[in-house]
Image (cartoon, rainbow, N blue to C red; front, side, top):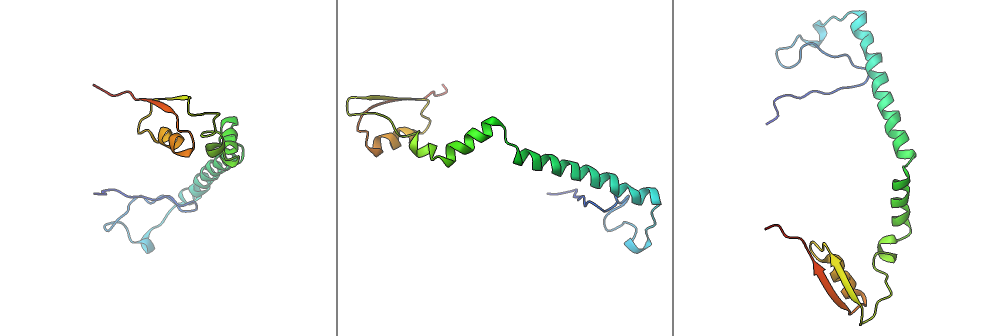
Length: 121
């Protein structure tokens, strides 16, 4: 059960009392200093937003490679494309559910497969 709930709105001041038993909104009086506190809060939120925006615009090298992998169809083109024939042996070490192995076998590679998975005692 939620027992406490609060929100932060840039441009709004913090309220000293909230809820049903709080001072009614039209009876509240705040000092200029308290009202001016919205600027500091708004600036902090804006800085966080700029950081998030930069992070989304300027990707790390790893993120660029991951995006390139998906854009180039890497999952289909590289993950499942091998020079295998019916004499090949495919070893899936760590095949949790065996999905990759199943996909390899179902595509065109009617090959021998060894699937190994670690199992806790």
